[in-house]
Amino acid sequence: MGLAFSKIFDKLWGKKEMRILMVGLDAAGKTTILYKLKLGEIVTTIPTIGTHAQQLPPNRPVALPRVINESGAPAAVASFNVETVEYKNIQFTVWDVGGQDKIRPLWRHYFQNTQGIIFVVDSNDRDRIVEAREELQRMLNEDELRDAILLVFANKQDLPNAMNAAEITDKLGLHSLRQRAWYIQSTCATSGDGLYEGLEWLATTLRKAGHQ
Figure (tube, rainbow, N blue to C red):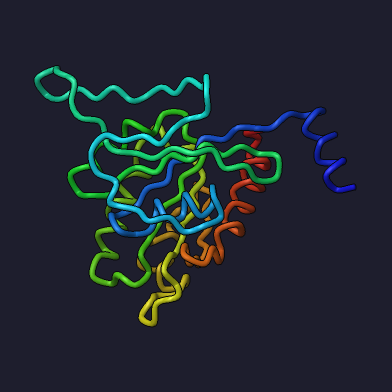
């Protein structure tokens, strides 16, 4: 019965598409999260470095950002993985962009038409939480992201020294974001704990914001 109703709603309304950008410092667990959501399993990942794209759906055009360096010549494009994750009649196109410090300046080339940001934090990495905050604040100051909602995944909660969501909220300064819808979700990418709760918030908030 549930499947039948699902098919009816798909036919009536069609699947909605949302563009989501997933970023964070290197080794935060972004790619593991992406493929846990996509495949429901853990995959062996390597740092997202260089120019790389996962296979896209057939006949689906994807506009890749054109990056120009100071001399006017084409520059390297930040490495990314891109997958479509379906959840509650919404197709989330999730762009997972590398987090190494040399790649981060290129994040801005992926901002256009982004409706939601997933910022992944390694909850166990206390030494770099200030760096994570600086990168997040720098990104949120970009005009192209002024209307994007923010989901923070406080990842690696299975580790013994992990900061909890309240501590990360404080250290990232999330309470100062008074003009932006945001939410923080404790997660463990390897087990999948918290990931779909985060997608639920994204789906609900995007509907309320009128993106559908």
